[in-house]
Length: 158
Image (cartoon, rainbow, N blue to C red; front, side):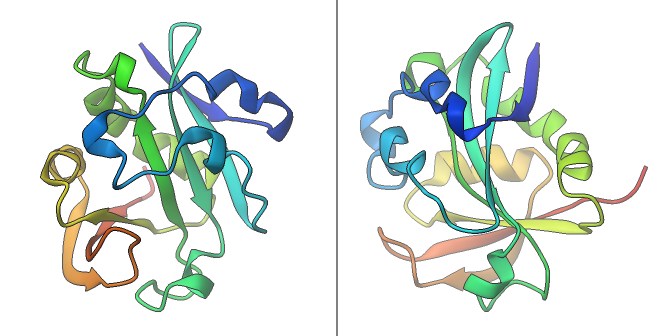
């Protein structure tokens, strides 16, 4: 069972054990770097399996202010990862299944959310697309490791 929850800044130690697989290192910053971010509008979230933190991501309420491809007020997700030591157990797929409901509660009023995934990371792109994300067909050239596919997840009211 996967549970998504806010991760208060004073609890970031809960996720510091998350490792990056060799093939992720070009695309995702180390977790110790990610949890030092103090950008306004950015919130941390933990992905738990049972009582164990197995993943992490950030929501960015000011994503549209930082990225011209986002619609005005459209939030974004950054730094989504499942720790390397937990991969291959279906946690990514299950996270994608519960993510829309969680984001509707965490981002009230948001009609959709964006993220970018590196063009050289087809495994991650496949997980997102299989989980309901839509490829906008556009690219962001501002990625640290090259061009990024821009994906959007609709958050319709239920």
